[in-house]
Structures are given as structure tokens and as C-alpha cells.
Amino acid sequence: MMSFKKNFFKKFDLVLFTSVMLLCAFGLIIIMSATASYENSRFIKVQAITIGIGILAIFFISSFDYRILEKLYIPIYIFCNLLLMAVLIFGTGDENWGARRWFKIGSFQFQPSEIVKIGVIISFAKIVDKNKNNINNPFVLLKVLLFAAIPIGLIILQPDYGTAAVFMFFIVAMLFSAGLNLKYFGYALIIGIISLPIIWFSLDGIRKNRILVFLNPEHDTSASGYQAMQTIIAVGSGKLFGRGLFKGVQTQFGYLPEKQTDLIFAVVGEELGLMGGLTLLSLYFVLLYRLIKIAKETEDDFGSLMVIGISAMISIHVWQNIGMAIGLMPITGIPLPFISYGGTSLLVNMICIGIALSVGMKKEGLKF
Image (cartoon, rainbow, N blue to C red):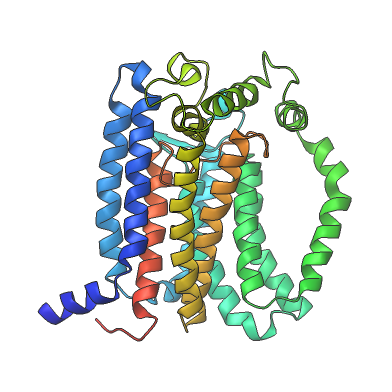
């Protein structure tokens, strides 16, 4: 038992774990400030409880051999697709947000596509690992892409284009790391450009307006452009050091919508300023650096591909969320990892860290 503990903590990536804990603490403080005007501590309590559960999940998952997952990749993949099909039939949200993305059980609500991210990363890592020697064969590549296209297609049907883009990004990253020829990425880019008119005309009015607002933030500032404009005002008013916690005008007086979830970086920008934003980015840099280090040093391709997928998933979330706040990306429902309020997304990210830690602990053949 003592030998297990000694080996466990010797191989455990304390820097990665610490960066996650600091991000969670940062997020809890920002949520506390963002929800101060609500006079309701429910958000803080739920986030704190989720962090506690997530810490237990990290230690539990990292203590197991991740290679068990590759034996279960087909059941995991089937479960993910069934879950996405179920949300199309029984899900909620279309009456309020124009998309059927959530399951609601009593007062408990969660977004299945968040859970599916883990399953698709695991199953896609295995299918790529199985076909890595022939990945540049067009027929093999088509089979691999069809494997990924089913869950992405089901997410688009909700419709949830922001989450679908997250899936596409980490799938591309995993294929790139597996050695896919660059010409295929070129073909995909050409097809994407040619498809733009088709995509545009297939969008509904709400999503077209989001793109128009992105191109011109002053477009319809009283309605579809309200979020984007208030976000830019909040971030810009923070200047170098911010207005101070609990002192943001946009945040505390209710001008900033979705301030504890999708637009939480605007709270960071307004109340902590540029320095607060850079501090947050520095923590993400450390986290992503340690994840990439694990992926690079791991000899097992399946484990390495999973960690690449996790790294790409977190990085595109950070890019999309912060990009929304500073006008570089259209407004979408993408949370900021470890910072935004949301039990499902936070727990999913912490489970992913547990998997990455497990991969890192086996990279030199550690046995339990």
C-alpha cells in the first residue's frame, strides 16, 4: 500500500493539477462577483460542490489504467449516439433558446453533448489508433470521418453549431497528430469555403443575426446585438487593472446578460482588467503546456491521441469564449473551462484532466 502511494504521487503531475485548482478557485471568485446582485448563493454552492466532486473524480480516474477505456470504445460510442438521439426526442430548450440541447429531470438540468465530448474523444482516439498506419488511404479516412460525422450530425440537428465546431476542432487536431497528410486539410478548407453560401441560407434568423452582429457589433444593439455590445463595453471599461471585484458597472447593475456562464470573461475584463485577463490566460497556458507534454512523452498512441483531443477541446473553448467577449468570435453558448458556472461542463473537464493524468502516469510503464 505504501509502495502504491509512493509511486502514485511520484508520477502524479502536480503542476497540471495545481493549475486546474487555481482555475477553479479563480472561477469561483468570479462567479461570486457575477452573481452578487442576485442575492442568491445557489450558483456558488453548486459550483463549489461540483469542484469537490471533480477533485474526487480526478484522483479516482487517475489511479486507474486508462487502457481499460480502449476496450470499451464501441459501447461508449453507441451510448453517446443514443444519448444525442434521446435529446432530440425528449430534450428541452427549444422553446427558450431555439435549440433542443438539455435534459431536465425535476430541478436538475444537464447538457448531454458535454458528456458526449468525453466519449467521442475516447472512441475517436481508438478508431484513429486502429487505422493510423493507413490513415492517408482515402477509403480508410472516409471510414474514420463517417465515425466522427454521426455524433456531429446529431449535434447540428439540435441545432448547436458552436458545440459542433468544438467537436470538429478536436477531431481535426487528433487527425493532424496521427499524421494525416496536409493535402486533406486543404481539400476540407476548399469544400468549407465553397459550402459557405449553402450554410448561410440554411441558418435561421437568430443565427444569421449573430453573424451580422459579429461583423458589425453596432448592428441592432437593442436586440440581437445587445449581448455583444454590452460585453465589449464591459471588457473595454476594465482597462489595465479593472474596476475591482464586485464593482463592475455592467456586471453589478444587470447590463451584462449570461454573466456567470457564457459571458463570464467580460466580468473578468471589467472587474480585473487586462492584468486579470492575462493572469487567467497564463493559467491556461500552464495547463495546456502540461497536457501537450504528456501527449508528446506518451509512447502509447491511444493515450496520446486522447490527451491531444482533450487539449484541443479545452483550447477551442478558451478561444471561442474569450473571443466572444472581445469581439473576435460570434456569440455562442460556449462556457469558459473551469471558470463558467455549470456543473456538467465543469465535471466533464475535470474528468478529462483525470484521464490525462492517468495517461501521464503510465507513460513510463507505471504499474498499479
